[in-house]
Figure: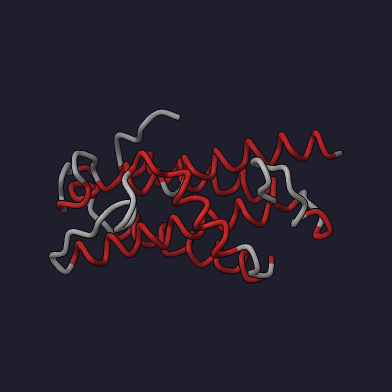
Length: 166
């Protein structure tokens, strides 16, 4: 997926990939939502929970940055080359959470991300290093990584799994 070069492109990508993912989710019966195999042992619910947690982490980093902080990313005890460990931690954190709760959290997190992207002026969205925790990426790239790009990743896996499981 190309990197958005404007606020309107960012919003379009967020909304388009969200709708596509929602169609994929709507096509999965409730009886199959917890079935493993979408992404290794992860179920559809686990993949959606993964999306929720990454948005929560991002929103936490952003909030801390607004207060002048420099939160450790991706986690205080992990580096970016240790994402499998972080993703496993997320999987274990959400494993026992009911699907209905995960889906409600997904909708709430999406709404927060969309509201943030809509509210920010284009200059802030595309300014590199706006906050120290962002390093070289502009805010728009962080938002896309936690919405449109992540939705695309999830949707592809869910659709592929759905075809195999059908």
